Amino acid sequence: MAALSLRLNPALKARDYRDAFSRDGFVQVPHLFEPDLARGLAEMLERSMPWDLALSTADNGYEVLNRAELSALGSEAVGNRLQAVSERASKGFGFVYLAYPMISAVLEGRDPSHPIYALTHWINSREFLDFGQEIISTDDVIKADAQATLYRPGDFLTLHDDEKPGADRRAAYTMGFTRQWRSDWGGQLLFHEKDGTIRRGHLPNFNSLNLFRVPQDHSVAPVAPYATAPRLSVVGWLRGGA
Image (cartoon, rainbow, N blue to C red; front, top):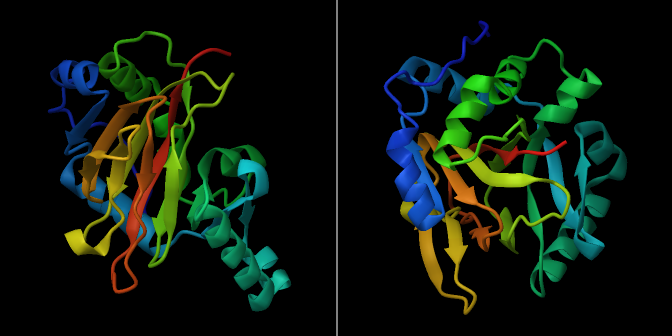
């Protein structure tokens, strides 16, 4: 795959989205990249990612299993892990989906020639960080986490608020790269009131940036068993502090 030259869509102005974020604690920025670049990024995620399996564990922990680890475990042991995730999720927090840990991949030298490196570095460029911090009205964003995700039929992320003491999370973000989706396939990003009411929900979509305030109760609805397209996104947090 040819190297990707990344930049924001030059038509975007961060100031156009500040008021909505201030008012609602959430804003969606459409057309994040120019069309050819957005298609190239989507194709990368669709065709060439060495996905890991990410799943929650007891005591609100998590593990990420690569292909070699999954093969070594065997289908029965993996199935038992997935069943345990579902049982815990029925009573509290849980998740399962495919993931690629973009930051740790760079730090560990994993897949060094993969074109996702360009996106990882761009997410931590001042162009993206300054764009995000202007929208959320702060001036101390110094870095961003980044994880590519693929939700398959049956994958989910239960209710949580992203609060993590000491992590200096200024806002959460999601970049959507889902090119085909039906509203009855699930997978919506849902925001919840404390009484359980769904305050707002957003379909998986393509070439958009969602920014939302932390902490804030949200979840990803389970993907329907009859969904036939991948739910693809890159997610993380804009972070300040040390």
